[in-house]
Length: 77
Image (tube, rainbow, N blue to C red; front, top):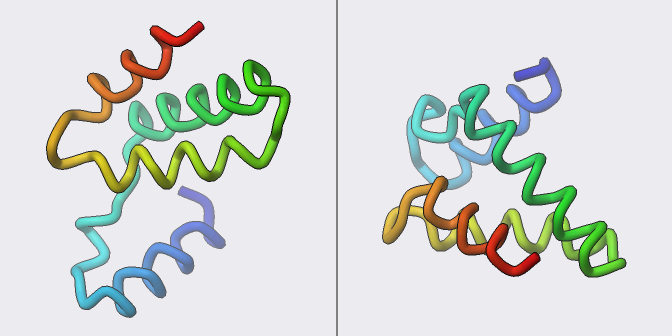
C-alpha cells in the first residue's frame, strides 16, 4: 500500500473502531479489486461503476470470499 492509502486505511479503521490490520489489502486482493474496477468501468461504459462495485464487493465479503465474488462478476462478461 502506498502512503496515502495507508493513511486512509488508518483513518477508516479509527472511525470504525477496528484495528488497522483488519483493513489491510494484500497484493492478491488489490489485484482482484483493480481488475473488478476495470471490468465495471469498461463493460458498463460508466467509470463511476468501478468504485461502486468495489464498495458492493466489500459489503458482501464475509458471506463469500473475494475470489467467489470476483468470479460472480467476471461471469457477467
